[in-house]
Image 1 (cartoon, rainbow, N blue to C red):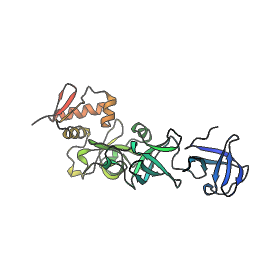
Image 2: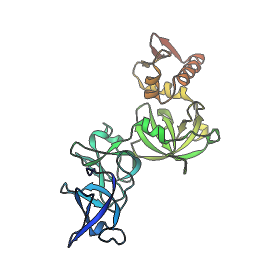
Image 3: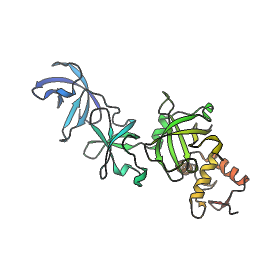
Length: 293
């Protein structure tokens, strides 16, 4: 077999080499298990389960300590250090840090995580086989999250930002022991400022979408909320545009709607219908515009 960083392997304890530790083997290759990486006691001939990684000298090493995630897995990790050129370093549960490269962070520096924030990442390897983190894609998060029950409406919950945008902030709401939580959106008008990736905030559930179990959220008290459904998201995006127009309509493809707004095309069309009924918007070809009063 070929040793791969980020994976677990069950290997035989082959021999002890003082003052370093034990060499483990799969019958073809050997790897060092340093004394400091041993949990409990081991002996020659025993088989032990270890996690594989590269040390600071680029050597493949083994540890009996288990990390918070393996290669290909997703976890919410704490930011413990920041390097302005390389990216941010995350606690991975081994006494050593996992790098989330700067290319994986928001372009605007004010939207990037700070020390103490928690970001959703997936463990991967770079071209040289060294462990790195990648920002978890939304389609991966969706598979790990659960649908919110209708009883969540008006409940205050903790939410962690995973995608900060101008038109709104996408978050994962804490759902206790149920999966990773619930996908939610804080429209731009329902937050006091732009929120950074990894930031945790208190939010109020204003709407539970029955078709996908996602929630719309607000950081305002109930009496401050004027519009709580998907229509607010669309309206806010148009308000943020200089000409009040957005290149989306009831003819836009469903996957584009989901990617841009975070809800289904049927929900988008219902929201457009509501805004049209309230005489707030008008449709021109494939664009939607704020109606000028």
